[in-house]
Image (cartoon, rainbow, N blue to C red; front, top):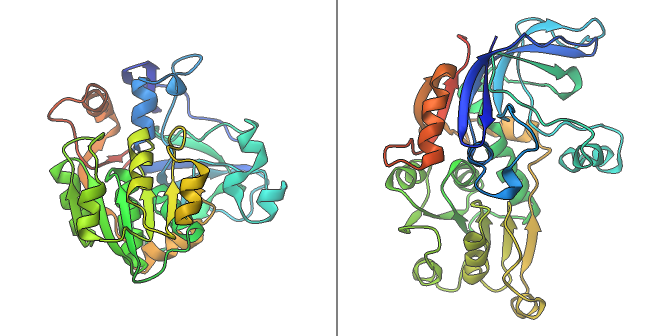
Length: 343
């Protein structure tokens, strides 16, 4: 089968490898759709030490939509042809967090007991317990972008975002655009902040009420946001995972506001400053809520297809990643949907 790999920092290739064998409790899935995230790009570029790996080549990719090709001898729930997906954070199902339904905080995965899912290839072996059925009303493209929706649903649940509240989404990449779509579905008044006209256009198409143009990350946005929301927003969703984005989240958030962080370094605010404004800050580690997120897609409350800027094949991935890694002027802006296999 064909598999996309990062052969060394800065280089993506497509190579031939054997189709993975499955155990009695696994399912072989034919990958139909796959869409890279910013984390895939950062791992490939390896510009920061946290993204370097001990050895290469390595696979990548988290989200996929596929069809069951083969089932293990002990698997009962699944049949050949079933449309399925599985998120990139496997769970043991027995630790305290798993039993509480917060499988994204599985102790086993955090401890490194389970490998991260890699889906930029024609076939993958998946534990049957990790699979989720794609509802008939959900398009394969949307299912292949599920992680962004799940993370946004989890983040907005954690900060208890409510209809009618002002919500600022910082960053309009894959995760930020998914957050815009979910916040709109929740009935929030959404203000998007991002770089790049194409990303801002997509945010508007998803229903973003206001879009603030910034020429680059590191640009101060407090005054721009407060022109739209005088007293600052009730909710800030920071999706860039950058020190700039984290700093701006605290700059713009209103009194009594809630900040959802997807990543970043040291917090740029001391305890007294948080107390003075009674801010609530939550970290968002992916999500456990596949069914809830798939329901939003099934009901068409969330539709991410407008964020797809280009459709490609697996063989096209090296060229697309080269543009992203080297930040060429003609690089793709928006989501790329990889048609891995016909289906």
